[in-house]
Length: 292
Ligand code: CO
Image (cartoon, rainbow, N blue to C red; front, side):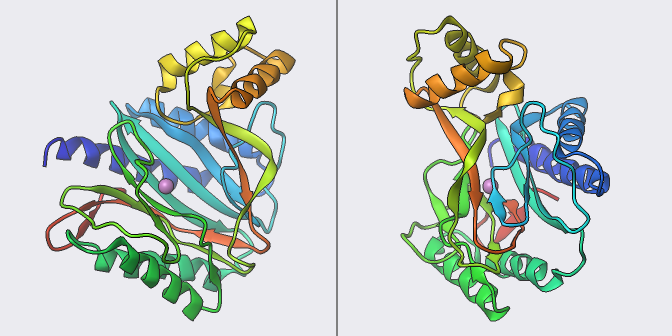
């Protein structure tokens, strides 16, 4: 495959970032200091974020990444989905692991891990994506939990985290896997209803459309985001070199409301959530895990 080594390198650094972050996660520390340490680790190792480190807590399933001045402290019993993305020259790795600080959610954690393992065993060129969704749903239900059916895996290409092909955690739609496709598989298991909704808070954004904003600060924020993050998601913190405080909030709101930026609100379910994710390369007769 063309650029096979580059996908592998991005995948390996992604998994190193997860392992590095996992060791730092301790009750009493702030989520912000962990996120900043992971970002620094990725940069020190020759990569950049493909999206801000996510540490969605408890009923949050995805898209919690500490924002500006976030002082939230890691709790004694938090169940944290550490989800990291790394890009090197646009080649992306995407992986996650659940950290259960209470130690009381072993089965919930195992459900998403087993679902991932079963799913990967079925991936090969020509396979239906629907079959993978079925396997994830069945495995998680066999543990007595609900798969989060409005979340799922996604096909990745260079500079593009979600190409539009998705592999939901319960069957919906279908496409056929092709040789050399880069795919993230990410089962989510929940003790709740298995359907996330958007919470009130957003710290992650991505460029979605042309620059449509009058405010000079908004224009500055947009141009900086375009230059630094291109087609990949970023955190509001990443805009601090060009705007701060109230002005930054106003700019993010204006750019989101005009369709220049796509906001990614925190996604929340009604129960506790676990997640496990890897990025794989599809082969003729199987799949190779890149994020390890
Ligand atoms: Co992903």
